[in-house]
Length: 121
View 1 (cartoon, rainbow, N blue to C red):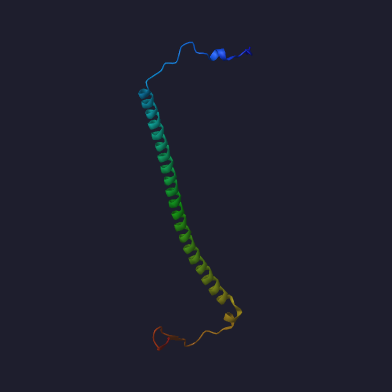
View 2: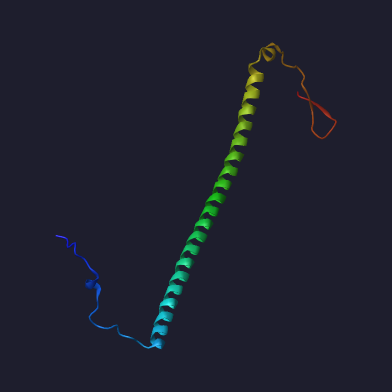
């Protein structure tokens, strides 16, 4: 059972407090202060390194994503050009107007970069 008659007499010291010289107390406080400051610096350094490395990792992942995005855009552009090229030649070949055309007997070609005409024989 819990004693409900709790009083301050339980906290009374029978022995007097041991007094130490002031220089020893100052030395002890300085040691505690130095240990506390070292711990603070160590924790701050740890969190700084952690956040710096996390930022660097995110930057690297962002750069990789940008490069992948650029490559995929280029690939998409090439594929779209292929689709357009395929659709345009198919549309021309399948049109009724092309079916009604007659093949030329003597085709004439213009050579690029010159004014010369060439006939196919």
